[in-house]
Length: 434
Image 1 (cartoon, rainbow, N blue to C red):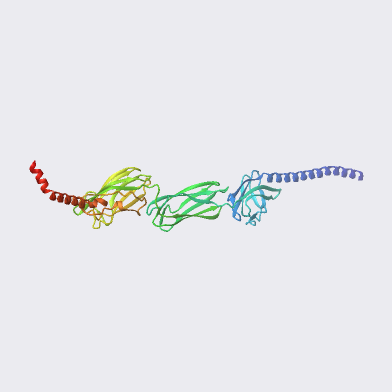
Image 2: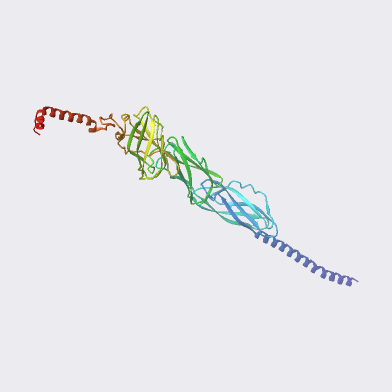
């Protein structure tokens, strides 16, 4: 009986041992498969993009670096302890990700770091690092650029000189010498006694190593400094720059220049008629040229204003103006016209006509002239004045030897009379013999 029991026990033991060995091998295989699956899942998480804002940092400037990871696997993966490793980059929000974050299959996750870049200028190489819950770490290189070069601006176009109340064009050029772009650019001009259009100019962005021209219309009523205040953002950090343009009045070298000559004045009862020639001795055309008189004279009669129209450079035209004036010592002859841009010009020439109240008299042309805006004045010199009264022969006398013509004529007549009186007997005898 004992013999049979022993035999049965041996047979049972032989059956149990293979089953235990098989179970152990199965457990070991399952554990290995599980570990391999976890490792494969974390290897399918990768960095897909890195965005730095701004593209290029100023020294000590604060900005952001955003790293995007994608999971191309079929299981979720836990991520922890994201970091940027560099001795020149300081992370401002390092404690934000203190817990494990999971990235689902087929999805992405962003890590945004607030950083500050240290000098000097140049390129800094940093390393993004993040751990996985069941696998190793993920590493990715990051390039960070630092540049202290500032945005530059200058006046690229301005008139030779400003004229009071005349609209002029001013161009401002902004240059971005940096490798990265800037954004939210605003230019605001300000100056005493000036009107600038537009009052503010906005430019959304300006790429690195490029420039842009901005045009303004400036009308000045007084001399002053016109300041263009420029603000822009490099990333989220604001920056400023200023450009100052001195506004001074003077002569526009390219403007039309009305030069007057062959002036003649005629009295017509209580009014006067003045005629003459005007020549454009400037460079540009005078469009819509109108001739009239200014205070104290007042245009009246047939030609209170005389419209010449367009007067090209080196061209001339005649004019006629009728007016009344109680004081002929200061009669302003006024010329109004527009340039090719539609800007208004006004030039005044002062004439002294005190000795010209009689009949027609010629006034020597004064060729001196001044081209400017509304405040421009032609001051008539000696050649633009008429002096002396009417002559014995009608009309008005001129200056110089012509003023002595009546005296000379009287002297000649007197001498002839004396000669004839003293020779009267001799002349009478000659006549009788004939």
